[in-house]
Length: 194
Image (cartoon, rainbow, N blue to C red; front, side, top):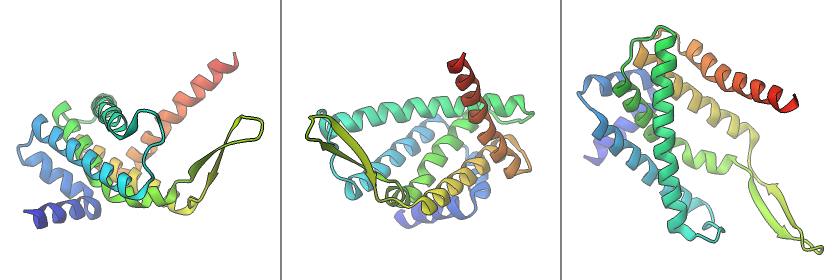
């Protein structure tokens, strides 16, 4: 069973469209999407716990994980809704349940990138200075690896969205995924300057 699961995860990373199609044709539903979401969180939390220092906030590890779970569920519903509605507006034929499965699949498969992301991200260093102000600096990280991980995540996500809606071009989907947040940021930047 574990070997089958690992094989499925690796297939999801190496052949994402085929993996998503297999998932969509497998008769899975919301319950399986929630199971993938939970498993993705557990795997990501395990990587984070092993590779990063314990959280330094006052709430401790339990509060950190509870807020992480709530955040992940919120992001799941927002992302699957956006995949469904934006894809439909662009002429796609996917259903909301398929968007939910693809979102959960992406969250689970992208946990393979978690160790690389932890290595690539600069880590904040918080120091109290002589003047009793807190100084935050960043150390470590690897911008090239961060770019590679980001590109791999975009490719996986674009593949999932393209398969859900039947779009032929993964790169066109990737362009839209980049363009929408960029347009939103430009609008808010314009509103902030007004």
